[in-house]
Image 1 (cartoon, rainbow, N blue to C red):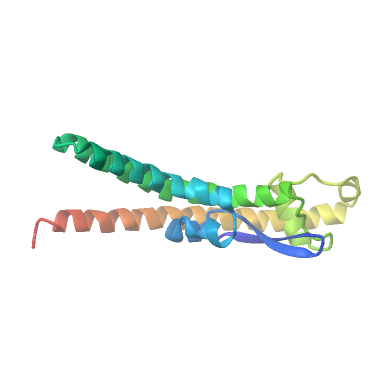
Image 2: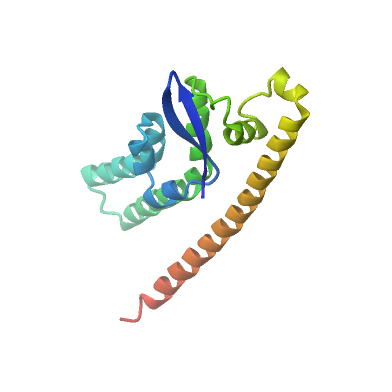
Length: 178
């Protein structure tokens, strides 16, 4: 599950996220749409648009060659599948970096958000923080817990892909038996 970090700009609060985006894995382009992240929405929807343009081109040209139709369908299916499998690994990071570039920062008193963003090198440590050894130790403890959570997430992701692969294999092998 993604880790939330608090960000704010001029009193307007938003949530940033770190880690694998399970919501993007399951709900794909709806996630950036609900977050009002239009660039992210375009990135997520582009494989579907490419597939639609490819299908329209084949329909307009009225290809009778079955190999062309099968190849185009396979290409668009692979493109959509790769986008569903790859983008969730990067989307939360892209979204949080976008918020930081827009000027959203974690509250000064929110050690959890500051520790995660600075530990992941999204933000730099201030000179005052570097001189405060106790604060750096607290940040280190928070970041170590975060890294442990990330390791559990990797395990969960692998197990999910194995489960989905086995489920797909069962459906593929059972399809000929009606």
